[in-house]
Image 1 (cartoon, one colour):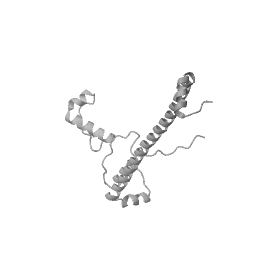
Image 2: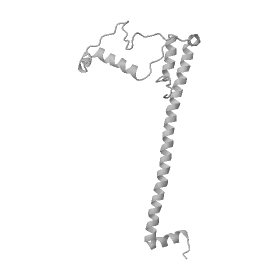
Image 3: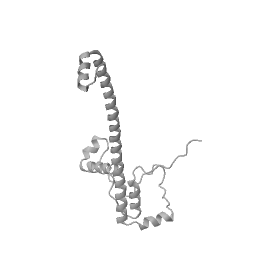
Length: 164
C-alpha cells in the first residue's frame, strides 16, 4: 500500500484569514497576484474595446449577478462544526486585522530566512572555493620553488631558515 495522502494545505496562508473574514462579512484587501490581474484585465477591456479584439477576447460584457460557473457540478456548501461557527462569530475586524498582521509577519520571516539561508550557502561555497584556491596556489608555488633555486634562497632569507 502506498503512502497515505495528506490533505493539501492552502496555497497561501493568507487564504485562511480571508476565509475567516468572509465568514463574518468583513473584507480584507485582496492579495497580490491573480485578483489584481483579473481586475486590471476587466478595466483594460472596458476602456478599450479594441484590446479585447486584438487578443481574440471580444468586447467586455458584465457578467450577470447570478451567473456562476460550476466546473464540477453545483457548489456544495461547507458545513463547519459548531466549534468553528462560534470561533467565526467571535472574530471582530480588529482581531482579523491582527491575524492578517501575524500572517504577513510570518511570510516576511520566511522570506528573510530564505535569504539568510542563501547567504549562508554562498559563504560556505566561498570558503571552500577559497581553501581550494589557496591549496592549488600553494601547490603551484611549491612546484615553482623546487625548480628555481634562487626563489628558494630568497624564501630562506625571508623566513630565516637555516640551510643544512
